Length: 590
Image 1: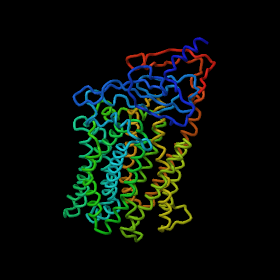
Image 2: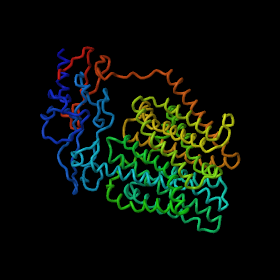
Image 3: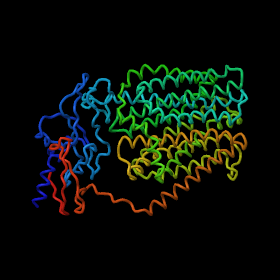
Image 4: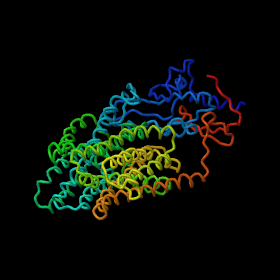
């Protein structure tokens, strides 16, 4: 009993001594505070171990010691102990109530707050709206605008370029290669952009990437002025490749900005930005079709390109010049090694195949759907409206499927249902030879495209979180580096499908027709869906699941020796205390 009382006293500095009015506090509330002595450690909120020293350089603005403290959620008030983990993991190692590490070492020392781009003391004390400050919202808006316009410029050519390429004696497969070449360059150069980022700077790559993409997009609208067909083909690949270089620059820089500006919400912000990426890729064909019907082939390229160039001053003002420290650079530059480790994990490999197949059939519609609809008598603006119809369903259903994925946490079953639904939509779009309706009519195409819009979002929305969970379960650290590796893996899998889809679709359309092309894509979805159910539904269930510790009694296992850190006595930020807890649990009344 004495031993238990003693350990309870040791833990008193990390307990939450709350007043009777518990409603005055918010759960999981991080506060940054400076103090002079250890007596304030028990002044109402528990201290997270770890200290932040102010900048010592000429531009430094802070001094002394700053500690982070946290108010524990109500469900942990009567826990036997709230033992903390190592100094840089700012959450309870055993309860795991907070899954996002607190951003230690943001100042870095010597640099001060000016020009670093990380959150300074004023930002940490600023008022937050739904978890973000005003500066974070402005940066998030800038990143979202770049992703939307950037990926819209990639897909705006879908309803117009195949027709123009046909006038220049380009085959359907050659036109499909122009679409695929963009994804190939992005697939190859994104890791290289991370390695050169410390040399040129994150903001320089970000701004230059946006500018290059906008200029190249306008140049692509001028290509029909070239009379020689061979020169037209060569310049299509050159301009498209240069645009992909700019896109890989601002995409990789955007990822580093997310790490630096949103250290506590990396996965959430990546999900928000991915929504704008999907919207840009989906709405782009509709914009291209509508604008080309008004001003010709060059109009959509000029409008989107000018918007990207015109927003460059806005991004210069909103985006801070951040310092690319070792952690941020390694998180992006060394993603290839982490991706190889992820490929060894069977569950991650299967989900990667799901992402690739989904992006494959989605990208195959770019060079194939427009000629098919043109044969049915649709004009260019009507083709754009068909693309818009599919895009609207994708955009409307994505938040719903994301909510369902977070609520029920049954990701693999959602992906399997999405793949089977996609196969049905592709079979209807073909139409499948064994369907009762074998006549290719417009309403049947709209039904198939509507199913594809809903099922594609159903398949893609839970994929990122599932890969992240699989990586952590297989030994990856729950850190920013892991987020970067998973994001790189997701992007690589998507780019692989985005690269092969137009080429494969163009070849199948040229040699076998639209019906065989869509039927083949549907069979791919059906095959991967069967593999997904077979692996996760049968193989994974046979494996013994790891023991999950209950939230009600996180520390009452008598067989475990727990390591705890006293953040007040150790000059590193914590001193280790080893305690054996008996099976009897003593609670503190609050």
